[in-house]
Length: 174
Image (cartoon, rainbow, N blue to C red; front, side, top):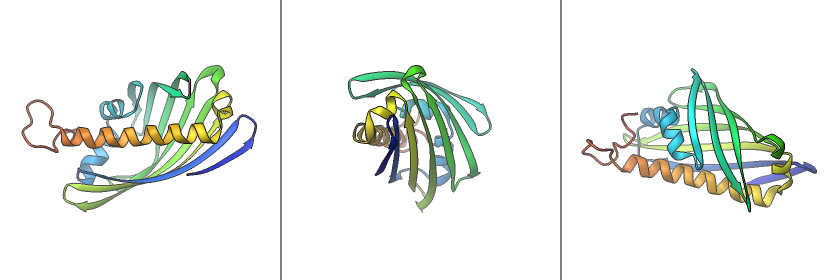
């Protein structure tokens, strides 16, 4: 993770990761574009609504250090290349607490019939109170949220939903 603080109240974070998900590339693409899957995987999420072919609105609560705030977010998929990847733009606002905007490049590569390597690189800019928290607090919080997202996604893919008999089918029908 690379960090930069341009001026008081503004913090820019840059981070990357690679995760292997036990789904085919097509199934993973579908899961990453499914509001119900996103709601399950995003920590503190109260709901995700698809508001266009490539756009979502979400409401979630984020805890950073001792404080938690509710954010409303707009997520927009830019340059979709199904099922190979896309760029995701996000804008989140928490009123007087500040805002967070970001861009993430997501690449999906098949490793086998039922395994896909997801790699991402994200740059996030936080301002206001959120930016004041600084790089160390925001960076560790962002890493925890990302790890939980992928841990939940993997767990959901390995746990069949009622009526499904094979492990790994939990999200495959999404």
